[in-house]
Image (cartoon, rainbow, N blue to C red):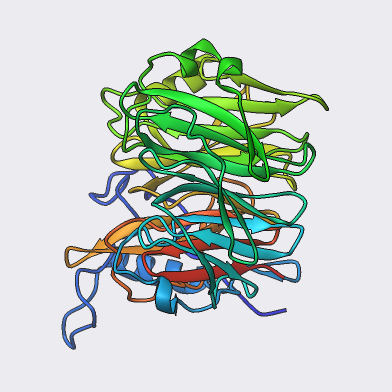
Length: 403
C-alpha cells in the first residue's frame, strides 16, 4: 500500500492566548512560487502540506486518486459552459449518454466520458435526459416549448407530441427508473413557477402532474434559473431537489418519488423536521446522492457563502456534517466516498478541486482533474454505476473511477 500522511485536518487552530489561536489553519498562498529570503507563513505551509498529503489518501486497497485528465470533447465543444450539463448512465448498455444543452448533439461515451461519439441531432436545448431501462434509447426533455423526444441509439429522434402544456420549460430532472421500466421527468414552468411530472416508455408519454403534491403542482416559489438535481435511492425511489437561486428570498424543496409496483407517488418532504426546514429556507441545494455503503442520503446546501453536507438515514432526520467555503459542483456517492468539487479563486480566476470523504466530516483533496484550468462556471456531476462519477466542464469532460 502506498504510504501517506494527513496534515492540518482541523479548520481552525485551537483556542488560546496567541493571536493565531482560533484562526484558520490553512491559507491559500496568493502567489505561484516561493521567493528566496521571503518566508511563507505557517498557514500557507499548512495549506500546501494538507493538499500534498491528501493526494495520497488510501483506504484499504481503494485509491481516491484515479482520475482521468481533463479531455476535450471535439464536436460537442461549442464554447458554451453548459455543453455537457445533461448526462446520464445507461446501466443496460453500460455507457454514458449526453444531450447537449446548447449545441444540439446527442452522444454516447463508452470510456467514462473521455471520448464522445455523436449519434443524433436534437431539436432544441436539452433540459434533462433519462435512458430507457430496456436499453433502446433515451427520453430527452427540452427547454422552452419543444416537445419531449425519444431518441434511439441509431440516431433517430421521435417527437412524443407533448411538452405537458408548460408555458416555458426552464429546468428540471429526467431519469430512468429501472423497476418500472419507465423514464420519469419533473419539469419547471418558469412562467407559472410550478412543476409538471411525466413518465414515458419510448415515444408514449403519460402526464403525472395531477399526482404531484400541491406545493409543487400549483404556483409556488419554483423560480426559474434554479438548480435541479436528483439521485436514486435504495428502494426503487428517487430524491429530487429544487435548489433556489436566491437563498435570501426563494426556498429550496425536496420531492420523494416512490414506486409501488404499479404507480408512482410524489411526496413533498420539505418540512419533515426543523433542521430540514431551516436548510431549505436558507440555502440552495446543489447536489443530492444516496451512499449505499453508509446507508445515508446526502445533500449539499449552499448558503451563498459556504456549502455544507447534510446526511439522513430516512429523509426525516438530518445531521449537519462538513462545511466548506464556497459553492460546490454537485454530490456523488462513489463506493464508500462522498465526492464533490469545491470552488476557490487564484488571482481572481475561478478554480475547482475535487474532494472525497468517507465520514462526511473530513474531506480530503484528491488528484485534481481540473489542473490549472480556469472554469467560469461550476462543474456538473452525474452519478455512475456505483464506482464512477462524471463531471461536465463546459466543452470538456473529466471522469473519476474508484478501485
